[in-house]
Amino acid sequence: MRKYAWAVSFGLALTAFTAYISLDTFVLSSAYQTDTSQTNTSMFETLKESTAESKADTDTSEAEKPQKSGRQHKHGSETADNDTPSESTEKQTVIPETTVQDSDNYDNDYDYDYKDENIGIKMTEYYWNNTKIYAADVRLTSAEYLKTAFANDTYGKNVTAKTSETAEANNAVLAVNGDFYGARESGYVIRNGIVYRDTPSADDLLCIYADGTMKVVNQYDYSADELVDRGVWQAFAFGPGLVRDGIITVSESDEVGRAMASNPRTAIGQISENHYLFVVSDGRTSESEGLSLYELAEFMKSLGAETAYNLDGGGSSTMYFNGVVINNPTSNGRIKERGVSDIVYIG
Amino acid sequence: MYTSDKKALKNCIGHICAAAFLAFFGAVYERFSHEVYSYYMIYAFAIPLFFGALPYGIAALKDVTPRRVTINLWNSGVAAFSVGSLFKGVLDIYGTTNRLITVYPTVGIILISTAAGAKIVRSFDRRKKTVKVTSCYYPIKRKLSE
Image (cartoon, rainbow over all chains, first blue to last red; front, side, top):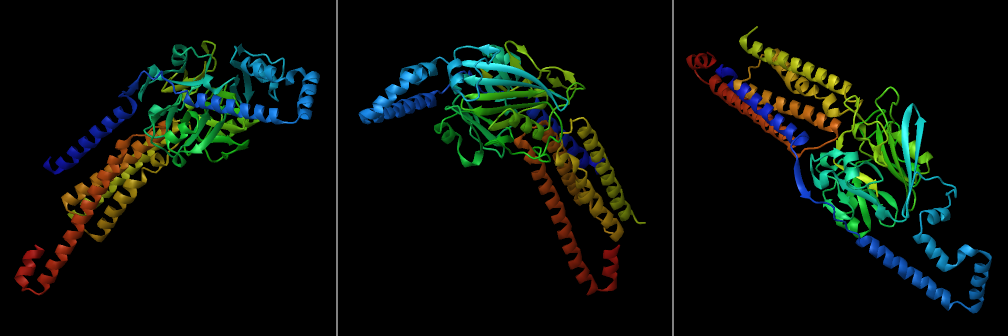
C-alpha cells in the first residue's frame, strides 16, 4: 500500500483541483459590480455639439456666399418643398418615418412591426439552407436606443438570466443574447459607454459608435478607454467579424477554430448609419439545421450588411420581440431558453 | 525478463491504456458537442502515448530500471498534462476560460523536470561509481554489482 501512497495522494489532489476549477468555471458566481443601470452618454453630447458646430459653419459659409447663391437657394426651395433647412431639421427629429424616407433604401410604405418616434423595427422570417432565420431590420434616430443589459443588473462571473427575463426587466422591444462575457476572463466589456473590463483578448471586437456606425477592430490596437474616447458606445468581444466593408471575412473552413458546422447563431450587423440588422437562426433540430459561420456571413451580406459580427450562439441564441421569444432556442437537445450573461436590445 | 523490465513494461502498458481512455473520452465528448471541437481534447491521448508509453517502452527494451521516485514524479507530470489538456478542451468547447488552467502545465513541467533531473543525476552518479569501480579491486566491484 505504501508503494502507491504517492500515486493515490497525487490522484486525489488532481481530482480535487479539477473539481474546484470546474465549479469555479461553471457554477460559482461572483458579482463584480451590482446596479449596472448607469450609462455614459457623453459621446452623444459631443456628437450633438460637433454636429451643431458643423451646421453653424455651414450656415455661416452659406450666409457669406454672394446674393446669387442665396437666390439659387430660394429658387430651390420654391421648387422642392423638402429642401428648406427648417423642414429638414424637423424631419430629423420626427423619425423614423422621415429619416427613413430620406434614406436611399427606404420604401415609403414600409410596414413596421414596431414603430415609435425613435425606433422602427421590421421582423422577417426566412427559411434558407434548411434553417429558420429571424431577421429584425432596425432603424433608429440615434444609436442611443441600441442598448445592452447585464443579467440581474449585475456585472460578474456566472451571473446569468434568460434573454427574455433581462429584456422584460429593461422594457426592451427587441432583444438578442449578447457575447456571454461572463464565460471568459478577458476581452473588453464596454456597455452603454462604460468600461467594465479592460483586459484585451485575441477575439475580434465589435464597436458600435455613438454616430450610428459599427466597426470590427483588433483589441490590442486600442485600450478600452481610448475606444470610449473615440465614441464607442457598445463593444462586444466574441466574434469573429463576418462582414467588413461589405466583404465576407470568414472562409468556409475557418470556423472560429471551434464550431465546424451548422448551429444556432446570433449576429448583429449594420446596413447604414443607425440602420441595423439583428439576426438569429434556429439549429440542432430536424426542422432547422442551423448555419455555419460562412453561411451566416453570406446571409448577412445578402440583407445588405456592410458590417456583420457573430455573437454567442448555440443554446444561447435567442430573439425576443414585443414581449415574446420568437425563435426556438435549443438547450441540451430540448427547445428551452438558456441563461446568458448579457443582452443587446432596442428600447 | 527481469523485474526492472516488468516495471517499465507495466508503466508502458498503463500509459497505453490511459491514452486509449483519453481518445475514447475525447471522441464521445466531441460526438455530443454539436461538432464544436478542440485540439486539446482531440490530441490529449498523445500525451500519455509519447511522454508515457514511448519512454517506458524504450526503458523496457534497453533494460533500464527507473527508480520508484522517478516513476512517481514522471507519471504525475504526465497525468497533470493529460488532465489539463482534457480540461482545456472542455473549456474550449464550452467557449469559456479560466486562469487556473495554467496550474496543470506548471505542475506538469515541475514534476517532469524534477523526474528528468533525478534520472540524469542518478545516471551521472552511477557512471562516476562505475569509473571508480573499474579501478578498484574485484571484491568491491562485486559488492557494488550485488
